[in-house]
Length: 137
Image (tube, rainbow, N blue to C red; front, side, top):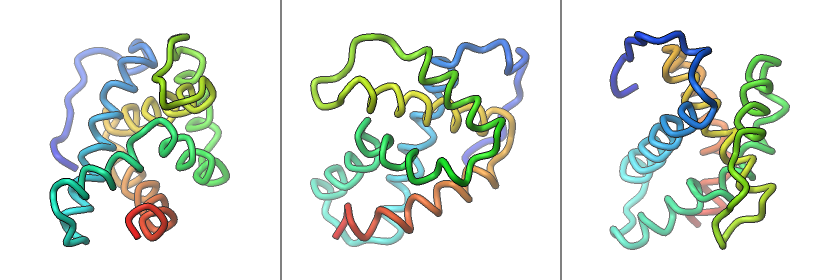
């Protein structure tokens, strides 16, 4: 993972939206790095491919795929993120997709901030293997 974090605040005291804020960055960096490592796409196509992964719709689909693999603790984190999601959504996502994507990001942010990088890699690898052939062609 990029850096090891050193929490000065109990991670359980952070709002789910703060965890999602971190998780969004973690996921985007993983997707972008993997695209560059494994494809020969031009910058415009790199962006288009990344959007399929990091959009609310893409994260919704990734989360639905991962749900059977999640532990009870991880499912609880996803639920916290979904329930904390604000009412307004992007014009490109349904409310369900938007809430699910916030839950997905909350989970990744929590895993990152608690140093569980191996679990992030495991979940990301599963998503990449499932969706890269479909979304990147």
